[in-house]
Image (cartoon, rainbow, N blue to C red):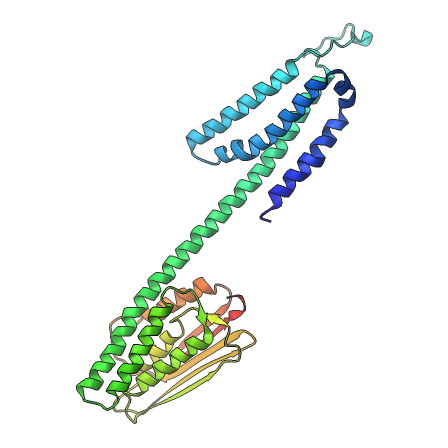
Length: 338
């Protein structure tokens, strides 16, 4: 599709225009008026590319450029008129024309050929030029949308970082405050995770295996601060580790489990499952809800919704349900096209 206009140019220049010229008695005129026919042919080819490269693009731009395009059209008409105005020969009078009132002066055959070829070149060049400019506009529109989506994703990723750091540092603060033996191992895990965030900050996609390992580290970090009331079941089964996913996407739902699914007084269970089969990722979480209002409570999930819509507009399915104090997330992503 990208090179289609070039192929049309070749077909027109090597086949269409020569055939159209042969349909007129060019051969007879060529022997008698060789320089005229050669000049006319050169002009028609120049006219075609003039319209393709200048006239049509100018007409697609601002008012000043449109005026330039119209001027080029008028100049093209003037040059073609000069070709048609050249007197090559005088046709013999037709005895059958006597007594016939003509509305227009008699037009010579070669003049008809000049204007016919001019109209053919104009129509063909404008059609191809309009097609080309339409494709250019569509390409620019797609590029603008892609840049907007990338900027939007970068914004969401920038919002996730302080959101993650706030929650994790808050947990670390509690461990050090209570002089918990897990405080130092938690800090080491946190440093490793921050290194991963820094490394993937500018990446659009990361290997699924690395994201899964990051989830393991996150669950391990959060588990260090849990008491005996909360049980965490983590199940990860990745067959094709070369598949890629957007960084820091899935872990947001995992973070949500620990933010709302633990209690110091009541029993709770957090189930997290991540698997991949035939290029399709399956992710599920299930946890109880212990209502506690926190800063940025809905920020992470809403960001994930938008990032999924941008990265996989037709390739994902997200279901979030809340029933009987049980919060469930089911996410399916087709990673085949990422």
